Length: 521
Image (cartoon, rainbow, N blue to C red; front, side):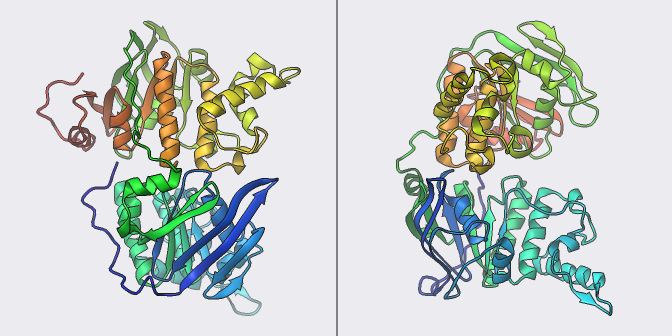
């Protein structure tokens, strides 16, 4: 949901524009097998500044970050750090030079402790023969968290931490290396509102300490809250830069996509059919209790709630992914048994999960194999004589979703996050479902890609498909749903009609408040 009544962390920085950049990129180019990912890209960021790097999925942001952090080497152009031209042959070289990244999907050693992850590969030693000084590692880690004003046990295993805590560990690791530049790539995508505000505070600390921060986000409320300046990329090229105080959100969107998006939520009014799906007294021993709702043919049913409300857990159970579930599920008036995902698919129910990288796609397979994976039995497991059919299916859904890729044999791991999400959507749509559950379908993707997904959802329901839309973004739920189911602590608090679903009513219900509004639909 949009952040409202949030005080900007941006300080008044009168000398920022005249200061020399701590990081300067000039004419950066990068190609992959003939595909141009970056073309003559320039970027400047100064010490004590938060610079928002903005662009659609596929604009080149991820490639640029990997180039800055030594994962990729540029094919052309120069990188200057503190006025000196540098090149990085590895991520370790970039980190030693003072450039580090905090990613949306954190990469750490889950079985090691917090302190061990912070100092991995550079543990201080003492004694003879030399031994790792564990006491010093833990003491220094505690000092880092004290500096961040974060309470985190340094002996805790990383596997037991929340997403926000993992981000704090990565920030502490950057501080331990005296990082000059910290890149934050969609750091708030999986955080609660409280954790987001905590991250804002830490970003303010980094800036006050003179660290340059590159902040990547698709959420404009976050960008305008924390950043001082912006740089826009489009189709791998530099488009514009400037102070955020001098530009509006619509102007930024226009720079990003090369066009104005007048209708972010292209809701198409569809005449709803008969009740298609009924869920009665759906219960789970620990996650949710007495969940009741129905879904009509051609309807978009929105599910909203705060973190921990139980929305995703209900959807996973409905798709046959949870044990110990009881209750009744009816499809077209007939009771059906869903004990596994195979059962759900056989009944025409598809589920697009929130975690696209671990649950949604096979990253090591090409695009066309991912899209046709659920329907191999229909087109042939060994694809003998069926390659043209497979390619045709992949092309159809790729065009519908405006997938940006070099070719259908490109590995999904090489795509941007938003385009990976489109592959997952295409995969399940290829099964020709009756009901499709979309769990955070636009999480971590840009406004242009969101509009494409929203348009496609509207096209699907206009053809009779029924959609359950689970989203943490209130504007998305209010803009797309015919009715809104609000969950609170494992229970359905209210079900609002489209006219009743005001931001005030929905947020109040999600928070557990009572209403004077008449009985919900």
